[in-house]
Length: 224
Image 1 (cartoon, rainbow, N blue to C red):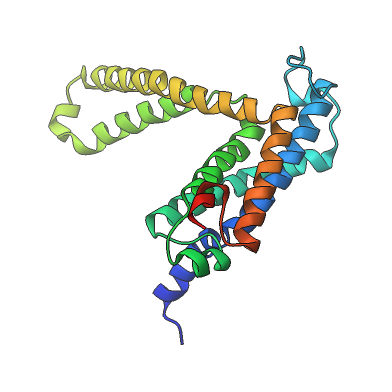
Image 2 (image 1 turned 90 degrees about the vertical axis):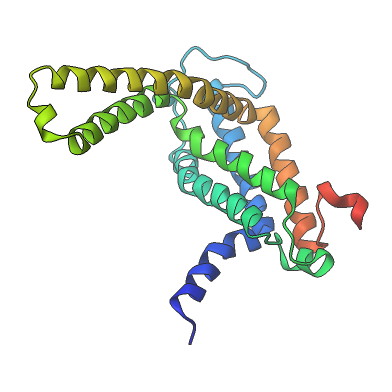
């Protein structure tokens, strides 16, 4: 009978071991981005559309459900990329037969990028930097209240100092996150632009198909 540890590692390693299939799923999701953005912008090549909120344009519920399903799928893709690289897991059985127990760098990067886009696509317009900064400020204030000596808290100015520190931390984290989150959101918007989403879909199908059927990817064509 398998131990809990064996079952646990089998579960967390299942996704990177089936990275080829996950890329195929990523290709299907890229097609939904293409369909969603084409419907939302009323054109395949149109760069801008005045109504940016999803609710302002009629989009099929099916596309919306698929897009929001990307939240969970995005986490799994990022998980598979990280675990596959850390544990040196091949992306398919065919790949393992050809190259042994080693991870494929291009498949890992592909899973990571597509996963981030899938995760951010339905929630691109949320003020992530502000929310993360606020959470960091609140968490800092709570930790100060918990860990500083109680005698110091009795000081009437203590609450103002704690609020000030929390505000500074919140601002610094918010500003730094604005750059990183903004960069990721920009990448998400670019890759979900219909013509580019079509290219992403075709790439995922090709890379995933090569990994599954022939045991190599576009990143190691010269090694076969």
